[in-house]
Length: 38
Image (cartoon, rainbow, N blue to C red; front, top):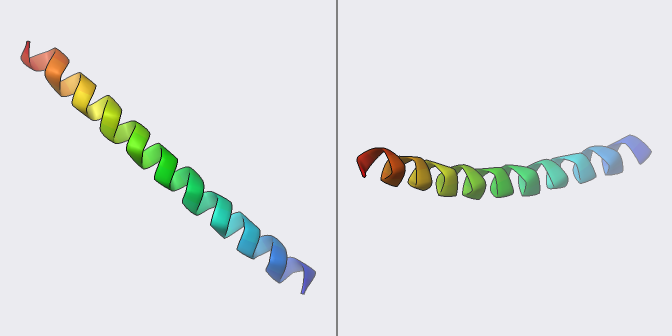
């Protein structure tokens, strides 16, 4: 039971981190593209 709760928390945090990293990467990607184009 204890391990299951820990795994669930890890997965939840991993998803949050993934979501944050995704938006960060998208913002970075957009910045890089506009920088390269101009």
